[in-house]
Length: 595
Image (tube, rainbow, N blue to C red):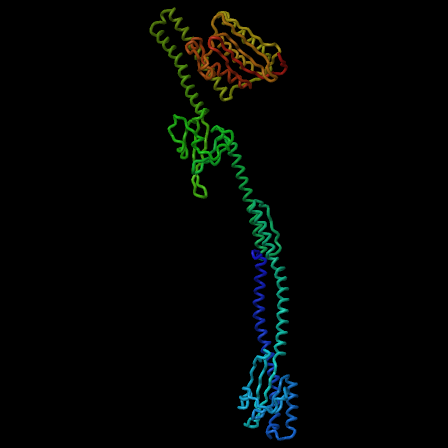
């Protein structure tokens, strides 16, 4: 109970009140005691003094007057009734002449100390406790004088029980009133303390709710005093805390959204080398299905470098590095690390991982492309230059040699023109500057026209070309670009099919959205290890034969880009010595139906 501030306030106020009442009561009782004793003493003393003034004429004749005894008895009884005390009249010889008490002692000597001292002319007053009944009595001895002669003593014995009873009654009344006052005051203090403690209790409960995570708390302010100001400050603090938490939540959501949708991987590592945070991109790059799988794992167990990389994994925590992963993906990653310091002075680092595999491949392809272009152009230029030098050296004078040399120069020039045209078209396709015109066309008519353009070449090679295309297949394509695809594929099939071979162009509709077109031959085929690079620019399986046939090595690359722009896909299936099948898809045009 004493843990409650309300009861502490009640006890404190009650203790203060009790101490104050005790001080007041002590002073009050002392003053009451003094007042009643002094009043009683003054009353008794007054009566005794009056009696002492009356007695000299009775004591001066030494008791010889015949009425003196009767008068003294009467005086003793009268003053005793008024004073409320026992009156004893004693002469100068210490003999009791009259008393209001026990008459049997009359005529006997009284040798009390107070009497003896009074006979010496000194007034004696004392309060003593009677051991027989344990009661207090006022003993007063007043000498009876005539001039300077002491004639006798008025000895008064006054019981103080009535005085002390009165004082006791007053004390009981006082303390009873005090008790009632303390009780009422306690009730008032409890009620008043609630006006202080109830707001504090409410604030405490609200603060406890906030400590448990419920920050939507407000306290009611019912006054403008310090408690009310505390409530206002609590409400202000609560509002600002909610605003701060909302801002933190928004920033956290922003950070999570940024990390979640970043294409680069982000990994945060603690001072012990374990992963504290990772986003989805980092999990994908490091071969994990979910970012949670990376948490608390040592960095060395997640980022394993390839054998060719000399740098240790710990070196990734400083600066920038580029490395190749040792996992089966073999991805090339660029890592940038920045250290950070947490509130407890522990150091860590944030590593940003960027997949530069495609960039490296593109850079490599660009370098290879430049090298291939330089090589492909240098070869015909060298040939042309050689034959021109031969003509300048005198071959021009020989008509047969001149015509032969000029024919070679013409052939190499045509190959260079075709190469430059193909390069220009690839450049337009790469940059998106190629113009397109998509219209519905009948696929059979397009295939038929393409086959007719190779009739003379097929006849010289004795190669048969047949097409199996239903007449009800319509496609939504750019006819000129699709003609270029057919020209490249049929031309390649003729080049690599021996004399007497067979070529087929097949088309059908396997689904409701696409039409599949295949160019199939029974030529020399393509080795299996060459198939992944077959669509690369300037890539040739048989380089010598390709140049002899006038190929530039760009036809399949152009065909692939044209098909992809149409929304289709192209692929090659081949087996060395048995033939090749090139398949690509085209979108269905309006009016088409299934075969």
